[in-house]
Length: 140
Image (cartoon, rainbow, N blue to C red; front, side, top):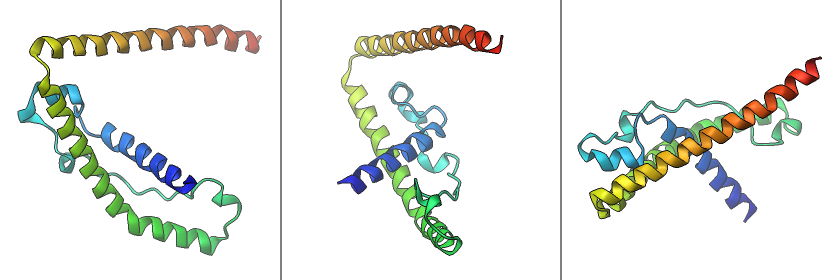
C-alpha cells in the first residue's frame, strides 16, 4: 500500500507539472471554446531530470546511482506518454461535465472560481505582509 501511495504522489506531481505546461488548458477554457482545445502533443515536452528517490542518496553508491538513473530514463518516455493521455482524458471529461451546465450556471461557476482566486490572493498577500515585519525585526 505504501508503494502505491508513493506512485500516486509521483503521478500527481507529474500531472500537475505537465498540466501547468499546457498553455490555457484549464477546464474553464476548454468549456468556453471547444474548438481551440490544447492537445497534449502540442505542449512542451517534459525534460528528464536525474533525481534519486527520497533517502536513496544516503545509501546508494555511484554504480547503483547510475543504474537507477538508467532505469528512470528507460521509463521516462512511457510515463510521460501516459501522463499526457491522462491529461487529455481529464480535459475531455471536464469539457463534458461543463457542457451539462446552462450558460448562466457556467457563468456562476466562473464567478465563484474568480472569487475564490481573489480570496486566496488576498490571504497570501496578508500572510506575506504579516511575515515581512518579522523578517525586518530579526535583521535589527
